[in-house]
Length: 113
Length: 108
Image (tube, rainbow over all chains, first blue to last red; front, side, top):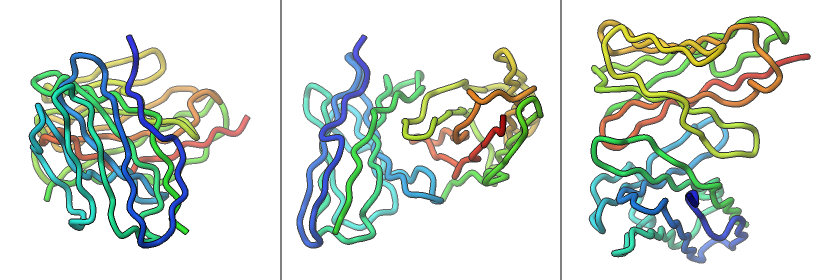
């Protein structure tokens, strides 16, 4: 079956701009989580969506937002980009109930200049 | 908030040596998962441990879950160059909370 698809794979943005990243989960998976990965910081949780509802939110500023559509696809948006937002953004999907194994996409590498 | 601590942060070994990474939580975990991320890749699920004291093996990899369900370890016997990557533990509190990982380098 198709894996988790993230688009775009690479992005270069300027400070102050905004960006939208997309994630298509594995068919049948209703939970989508987003993580920010930077060197030395591991995977920091941004938010999780389940059946179009935000179920959990990490400790990130309000510039980071997301949503999930009825087909489980998810987007995350970062407004007013800062240099420190440069990172690999990973999306992970799971069935979301008792089956919690996370399947990760390849990620979107965002560079803010 | 919930967090998991992982040590060591880096480990360099000669091919054929053993490797162990440890994961500790300040609170009891319902379960713990382990992932491996190859350089330039994305995390890939390895295993989930649920029961207190559980031990699971996958070929040269041995995973343990502590009796108190607050710690876990991953041990690799006789490392190979294919073992290179970063190993993460993740505690399930809904959502998964990841440790910072242990980066393993294997010198041939």
